[in-house]
Image (cartoon, rainbow, N blue to C red; front, side, top):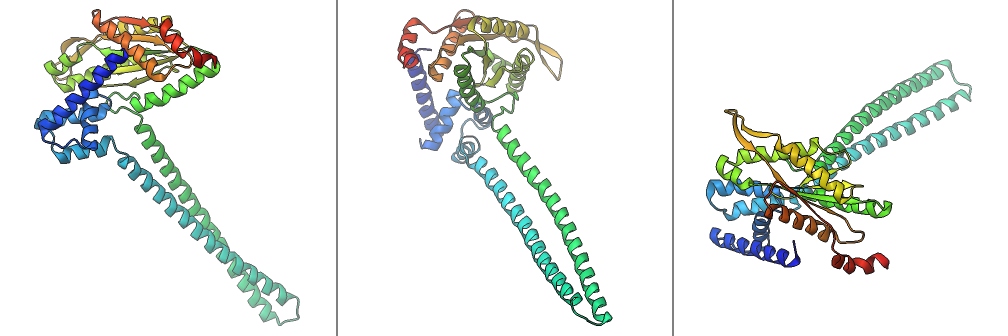
Length: 356
């Protein structure tokens, strides 16, 4: 999509945002604006799904509902709560371990003092009964030390297990924050991270990198005709088909409501077009059925735009070119693949970067 097209689209989303806020009688605060803008632009699929459900039920949002959507999907409060809780658990566990170690050190010091006293006793001529008493004290201190060491071993083992669980939970939170819960592929945040990583690898290794942007044809019709549950089924079918037909190094993410993006490392645009057509043809062999009645509802098709990364171009222009190719595919009849490479004019604009 051209820069003018992007500007027009952004202005349209902004107008829709203000209109929706006015409709629901909400002030255009930064938080409220962010919720409605994310909804209209589709930049946060999870927020959009939640808001779709609320709008379908109530017809609009109240301030409390808008605040809850912001806190759940756009603020870092939820993630901060998890991190703070995890940090507190680790601190508590470390304090407990240090307490056990301090207690054991105190016991070891007492044990050493007892041994020194016993050694001094043996160096002097003392009655047998006194020696027996000293031996009994040493034996008792040895038993106490053995018990303390056993407790330390047990508590350290428990602490190790608990800290392992805390780390696993933290890793799981991090993983979940990058996953689209409906389709179980990466979300937009995951895609942004992987795009930056693969661009770096591409520049370092001098290899190719291609991007596919796919959009489900007539998705709104599925939702309007059969309901959101069928729409969710369509999204999951497309995601599963992409996963089944791509290689291990390829990266899949849900980019928007019905849009998916696929990064193809070490792949030029012509090969990317072949991959895209294979995905499109594979999906065309599958039918959507209503699970409750086994009724066939039709075949799902997708349109795909393909492009190749040009060294040192901005990630935004890379994505915009794939989006423009997707737009061409939709405009030219849908259920097709269109490839687009950087034009000589666009190449000339980044040439200074490439030669500097």
